[in-house]
Image (cartoon, rainbow, N blue to C red):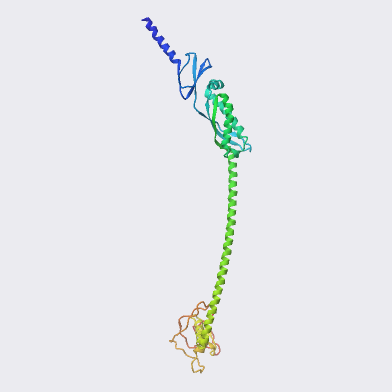
Length: 348
């Protein structure tokens, strides 16, 4: 009975010791077996592994690709134009034994701090040897490759492999942004002024060409109009000449009626003429006695209308003639032996 009481605790202790001697290596990790702080073995294959209980301890390290963001760094390129660079790196622990010896018990935290120093140094060295335009151009990929290549040599001493280095952002310092934006605005305003000047110059050329075209077209149209007007006047004169030669008496009668139509208007003017004036040849009696003819007031003589385009005011279709011996008006004094024709206007 007493033996069974002692066997149970012993079995428990044995089980505890047995379980403490067994550990599992995950496929995403690497294990480092330490004995009193000294590296005894490295377990990289996933599965079960064994160690001495109470004497040895196991430290696990991540076997995946890790990333590290670098704090924004201010660099000065070769053109003395300061830039603020924000970068990050991807790395992996490839030699856990060397990694343990290099960083000690600090582990991944200490490794990241030392990696920051390496990357910041490489960033300053590489970006300081080129201009800011190169950093902001397509050559940026080549610069990142140079930074990664330079950092690999130093990071290998830590048992770390640098996979890649990338520049996330490249900005100007806040104190330089206002000056840079002002310079950019000035450049854009200058380009806009150049474009406006070129546009105004082109507009002046087009406007001058249009004015010249208008003058040429107007001149040609005026010349053609004058030619057409001259030809029309010539044809009209020929027609009048033929009509006059065909019947001179009727032609003179027609001209007299036209003169009556133009002279005898409805305005309140007075026409003063001599009784034996040729203007009244067709208004005199046939007896030739020289007496002033009387025209009935109720008889209307239809006078022909004035020619189209004449500067005279067009005559009304018909007009009533009054006796020529009518007394002069109060506003117009009578002249010696001159009849006054009331209601008539002086032609232009």
